[in-house]
Length: 306
Length: 112
Image 1 (spheres, rainbow over the protein chains, first blue to last red):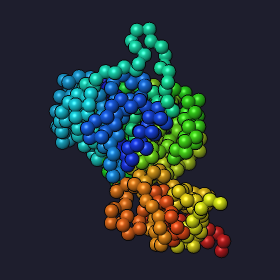
Image 2: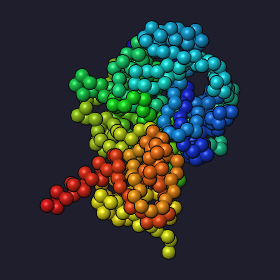
Image 3: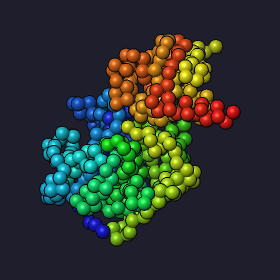
Image 4: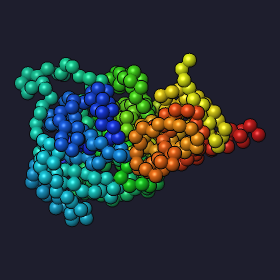
């Protein structure tokens, strides 16, 4: 049971092969709002119901995948303290000056045992969700595509899940909410710093630093079906769904951006409280754990990563 | 009639048609046979790697994590990014090779 000073996943930086195609995908199909661009050619987006300036950054590169995922922490003091604790844990920590990403305060960046780069920051400029803070309407008009409400979590693939778990639970004070085990071996770990059932998740994989998906929240199952319609309407590469996960209970659909990065839109998981005990799925029920309806493993879902 | 090019997979002698402007993987998916590994369809994941042995084609941008500059100049690419401009002969590589050949072996032993 933990009370983390980490608030939530606040941004993810993804590499794309073709920026113009990526902008159409993230803005028109997923329905994020383009909020800025910078001198390096990076393009910034936010989901409509997020308050801070941006949550998704795209960077054109020669290979797709994730550069880093950033978490917002409660204060500069918490940032300094976590930096010290990460260093004592053995992480190499880099300070990145404010405004290296526009509208974002100073960040610290470190590599975790699975080879991924994680960032923490305490400040990002406020934009609001366009509805105001006095007598607001429930949603803004003019949203596009799937109308994603927020960037929710990432699922990452890597080798050393055990040391990762130690770092996330002992240093960053995340809770282990669900796991998949094969005897003593952890195959998957789902971690939360909040009331969400996952803010980040890991699956065991021989290669370090791989990206499985970035996930975005929708409101209802009906909206998941509408997302599925849009995927067909626009000939977007479908991975799987609509279906339900056993893990987290999420209702979900998976698809790929034009560079092969996997996206998820989902709804309907449950509320986590820090006094809950983790849920365990056993390897012999892995099919059901991942796809509750099909109850069988899917080669692509397990092995296709960027 | 719309222009279409004939693609042959050398290892299995399977032949299929690919419409002008369409990528090879999309045409392979239409074969509707098991063992065609379809990943991201966006040049990112690397599962549909092939070598073009003969014919003309254009290649769209694909991940350098899976296809090096040298490989690309030697006719290697991801089927989801290759668009034929003539009939093509291709060989399957990597995951694509394992998957395509394993399925052929299974089909052959089932027919014995």
